[in-house]
Each structure stands twice: as structure tokens, then as C-alpha cells.
Amino acid sequence: MNIQELKIKAAQIRMDLLTIIHRAKTGHTGGSLSNTDILTALYYEIMKIDPANPKWEERDRFIASKGHSVESLWCILADLGFFPKEELLTYSQFGTRLIGHPNNKVPGIEMNTGALGHGLPISVGMALAAKRDGRSYRVFCLMGDGEQAEGSNWEAAMAGAHYKLDNLIGIIDRNRLQISGSTEDVMGLEPLEEKWAAFGWHVVSIDGNDMDELVRTLRSAPEVTGKPTLVMANTVKGKGVSFAENVPAWHHHVPNDEQLRLAHAELKAHIEELTQKGTVHE
Image (cartoon, rainbow, N blue to C red; front, side, top):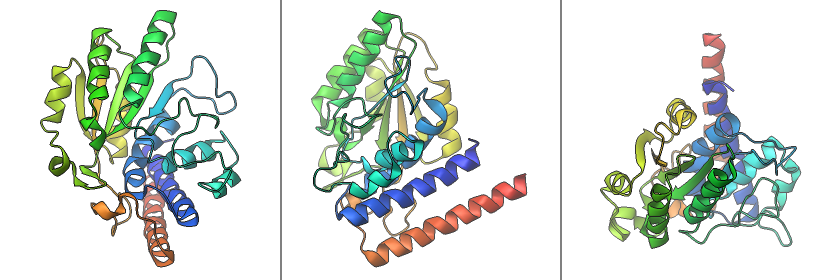
């Protein structure tokens, strides 16, 4: 996909995730909207994956440490054919595989996650195993910024640097909001980039909602050898839905019928604008 197509795909995924959250009457809306561009870049352009062979040994691994924002991930996996798209209608229903956190009974999911602070330690283990087994795959771990208050992340950060895991790429969805408000009010994180650098990681700061910048950065990772990479993806919580952007209440807010209609209309207009731009450029 080119950048324009990736932007359109991200808007379509946002529409899908809003639909399943509205239908289920539950979900982490704000964080799923903020990380959609990151996941779209990874799954449609960056990672080596095969939906027809989800256990392919040389596949790149993805761990959603911020597992509560799973809705965008479910929509992408369904769109790629890891499971039937119709199954999205069962999200958070009784007996479904598509629960409110990643579930490794679903093809394409490596580990059950959601208890914050667990994803990076798992990723360190996977990356170390790849090194010791002589495998070429990379491990991508998406973390939340509120999650950075978990001490297990920093233990894993030390281990990643100690073992020189340059096949490990951590990504922080830095939207600066968590369920109870600003991350800096709940537990101050800054200077966050300097902290990761001090723990021995190569740190890259980008606009995490800029598809061109995401693809360019993730395609070149790792930029250095002998150390893991941390991508500080500065994002907007609720991205793509104007009335949800940077609003803490949308962390776990379910759109009502009117809000869903307005959000879909806004995203459809964005898709039409992108499509027209693409036609002009052709």
C-alpha cells in the first residue's frame, strides 16, 4: 500500500472499531483510535506476517501490551483474513473469542495481554529467543504511556539493553491521557525519552498519527545495531473523531447512536477527501 491507501485504511478501521464498540456497548475507544495509525502501518506495510499461516516461524511478532485497546487490533486482523470479518459482530458477547483484551485462541495473537507492564517483558523474551535460535524475525511491542508507571517495564528495558536486542522495537502510544486524566497529573513521566535513552535504548520521537513518518521510521528500525529501539509515537487520544480528541472521558466511553452517526460521517468525509487527493496525484 502507498501512504494514501494506508491513511484510507486507517480511517476504515476507525469506522469498524467504533461500530463494534457501539454494538457491544463496551470498549476502550480513545486509545484504540489513537493507536490505529500505528497498527495500520505495522500490519499493512512493515511486519512480515502471513494470515494464511499465522504460526509461520519467521513471522514478525507483535505484542499489544496496552491490551485494553484491542478493538483496532481485532478489526485489522479480521480485515487481513486471520479470522472471518463476520466474527467482529461477536465482540465482547458471551462465548466469543474476541474479548476485551488480546486472546491467543485467535489466530494472529501471540500472547494474552492486558495486565499492564507485562508486554515488554514478554517481548524481551521473544527477541532473546530469536537471537539465540538464529532467527531473523523482529518483535514489536506497543505500550501505553500510562503503563510506563509499571516497574516491570523498566526491568525489561534494562534486560533488552543488556542483551543488545536490536531485533526489539518498543512503541509508546504517547497520547498523554489515561483513564483518570493526564499522565503527568497521575504519575509524572517526563523526561520520558531521556529515561529510555538512559536505560540503553535508541530513542526516536515521531508524530504517531502521521502515516508517512510512521512508515519511514518503522521501516528503518532498527537504525542502530547492538541496542533495542524505542519509538515515542506522539498521538492524539480519540484521533479521527473530532469530539473525542483529547477528551479523557472517551478512554472507556461508548458512542451512542447519534455519536456513532456523526463519527462515521466525519470519517467518511475524510476518506472521500483522501480519495480525491489520490486521484489528483495519479
